[in-house]
Image (cartoon, rainbow, N blue to C red; front, side):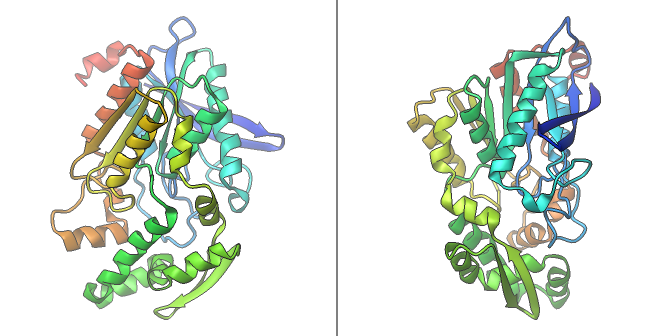
Length: 346
């Protein structure tokens, strides 16, 4: 496996920085297939970690490295990848505060173009994989790039964003009395958005419906200003209709104990793809892992605390999930496992 720093220019005056991850034997003489890896909410950096520019209300979050770990696994199975820092994050230019789904569209299509321009990459075998909100962006890429080779939708939402917020924030409100005073203090200090959102969910939703850009809400001694731009976009452009753009071979991959996006959403995603006429869809539910395919605790209350405190993000990504992704990508892109991958016994 080889990693090469890359940069590309989605629009005049803007340069994004990323990493091209190649199988060891990739070359202009032995071109390989490739995937653009798209992070979701909280997947702000090229490795799939949170950046303070886009996640200002989360203090010192663990580095889950989902995109980096996926890239390395895919390389061992003969598939190259590019992953990049989002606008205003890491080494990329631009302003995080000025980004939205439209700027994401421009950036993600440019990442596909970058792959197709590389001499080590077969331009006819380039696809996309998106995690969480990145799955929505993968669908938009499929709309913009009709000859896309494949699309992986990881932890995709098929229901409404309003129900998603009610489910996530409602969990915090429901368990608030059971949290210890130390836990509640930690959440106030490190996750103020979730604390305020838990007790002001409907006010948050109503402010978005009124067309407000930001809203200031108070709860549990906290007063914070919450950005509504992305939430309003999600309300106005729900995920489910966008699945119709995915006409290529597709993977629906979901954690069986996902506490961000219900596992039932995976079934909705699969159904929507099939109803849109896509007959080449694989559905994989990985048991015992959460939204980022990291293991969860057995105890239900401990599992809730791990979710709201982001503790699971520090755990290893499931090998089963990584193998499911790389196995599907290898089949969809007709990849050849390099000798180093065979020697590793993967």
